[in-house]
Amino acid sequence: MNPVKPRLTFEEYLEYDDETDNRYELIDGALIALPPESEPNDFLAVWLQFELAKLINLRLVKTHTCEIQVSVLQAGDAQNRFPDLVVLREEHLALTQKRLTIKLDMPPPLFVAEVVSPGQTNRNRDYQRKRHQYFDRDIAEYWILDPDNETVTVFQLNLEQNSQQYVEVGQFQGNDLILSDVFPDLQLTVDRIFSAGR
Image (cartoon, rainbow, N blue to C red):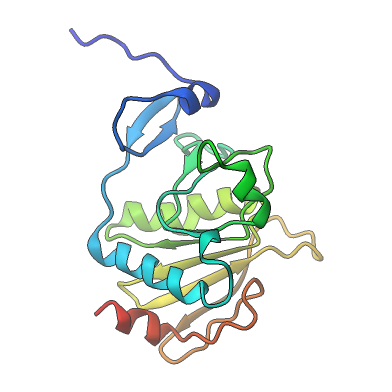
């Protein structure tokens, strides 16, 4: 007989330490271990990190290690996400000295990006569930890098129109220059991203 594991609050989860380097999502109070990243997805996130670091302080650009507390908007949502890439605000450096977690009582990150893993479940999570959670968290810009289709979809907050969801700026492909409000000086085409990973 397996003992029933206790359900954790988010505060209890933040204090949890199993003396491993495992990353967990907290779903309905249960710890769900995240699988390791695939090499291609990891490479694309790291490559983009260095491209963005040409424009801002490298210390503000994190891959796979920055955790964001998010609201549960529907059953089965995680209370935390580990985006493939996060761009912090300067004030986060002081706020995350103990743990690289952006909690709900902190300002949201400026930017997140996810690299879609194969499979419909992963696509739904990145295109729908995470999208709604990142919007609810007031993250200014969300990119989805889709290696299967070689597209980059850019979503932005539109506070002027009081929108209830992200505005899709565009789904960019090929030689399209990616448009970004967070990085207006970025000169980056979709081809450059995906050709780097080939």
